[in-house]
Length: 385
Ligand SMILES: *Cc1c(COP(=O)(O)O)cnc(C)c1O
Image 1 (cartoon, rainbow, N blue to C red):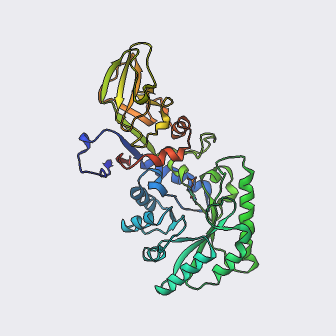
Image 2: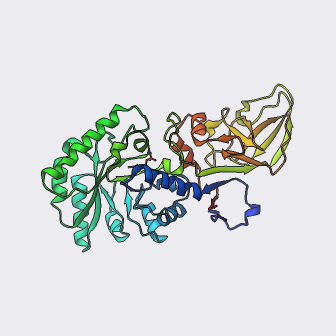
Image 3: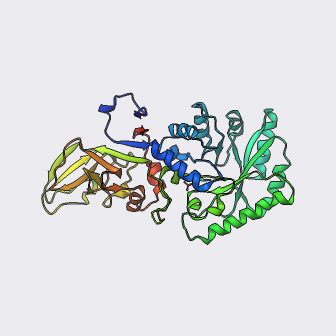
């Protein structure tokens, strides 16, 4: 069964949509969830769904994780949490980002778990909960070496004392975040983990019940399983992609997302007739070329120009010229390719494949940026079997 998510702009039947689309393989997503669950047992698991679930579609992906037994969900910003609640998701949802302005009442209204990242903010949460005659659910954020948000590990004791003296908040969790866990060799990861464990001694020392503690992201799940603690927060690995192209692919996860289009134009290009903006590429002989309707306006990054390749009928071909906003041109040399033939930008054919990690190398970026840049102009199609 496949169902096409509504086009964001108009209602139009599938056959006449522009053929560029993303396919989300939910069977692979369920498989990856199971693999990660088994690898990290007995830790609980919080799939991370920020940035439109790494491009996989926030709401459908969240519903699916709820169905297959996730314990929590994690998002980056308040709006993502509100959207999930409005679409009927009832799992606990932790918003990982910092709170700003007058957001706290909305967190409370939508029963979203708040990241408390300073003494001042945790007090503000407590006061707001009191005023609204409710309790706030919070996770305390400790900065062990990322210098983004959270209380520095060396000031954590005062923070924990203050937080645990408040009455209108329920401190469900305490967490930190790794800066270098995509590097299997990183000493800094060990140092951050030591700092976090030191902070957690507060609970034993004060004979307090320790909240759910967590620090593990995809990189540390792969390279540093000691850090799994009570709960793990995998993002990219759940989607079957490794945090970095340099890591060994030693876990049986499968890419969930593939990105496809079709040929819309065929021509012969003569020598001396450059291709695309800036006229950066030309042929020395007659070649056949096809045009494919995808470009940086969809998130097929312009920095892929002169590096990237596509698959047509199980053969790899180079993209020539610069990537335009809505189109690319593919050199098929002397081969025969026809209008409407399928073009795989990311994914696999019978024997050939292009991975997200490869694309990210060609664009001199990281796999995360490839996935999260595929924007909502590209329809998502969910495949369940
Ligand atoms: C994004 C994020 C994660 C997930 O990271 P991956 O590398 O995709 O596994 C976990 N925790 C926090 C705080 C994050 O911001």
